[in-house]
Length: 222
Image (tube, rainbow, N blue to C red; front, side, top):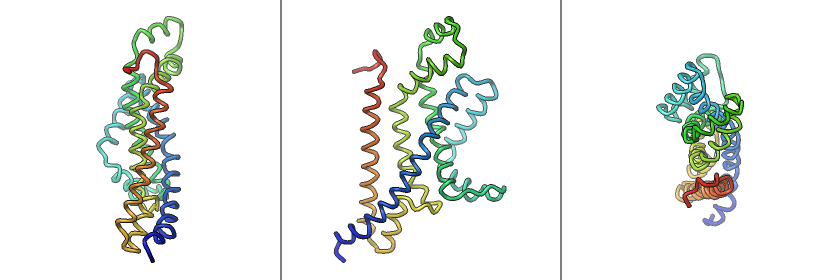
């Protein structure tokens, strides 16, 4: 079998199947990771004492725990306490937990950058703290956090390859199986790398468009 036939008839179909799983992992993890990040950021900034302590502990734990170890705990460790997750669900759960913690840091930093005068003016108009957060703080914070959040989304694209360690046959896993079966390591892994590069390039382009579209007037250094 010549190389072009191998790539067209064996490698590409396998990688496309793996890519579908990778996109599913990302599509299910990213929205909930963002929502979790918003919740943790708001909890750390405006929550009560115990809420702040819990959110800080959560972020500290996730930062200090390698993602692969977290996935192993969710998939191999939880069954010992009566909680059993499929490999796919365990992967998504781990990605959401990780993404939430890191996204919260970008969002919290953006929230801290909002001028105190805006908050004072909003309260003077009779707005409750919840209204201030929802209508004043978050809209600006999320727009300012787009560059950081886009980086975290790119990390998530690459994190998804760790799902293979839990037997989820995503893009990297599909490439590894083909490479092992046909001893075509260079062809398989170069193609896998090219697909990841394409995903990251598309994400970067989309993030740049969002950043320009939602830039706050007067805050751009350009």
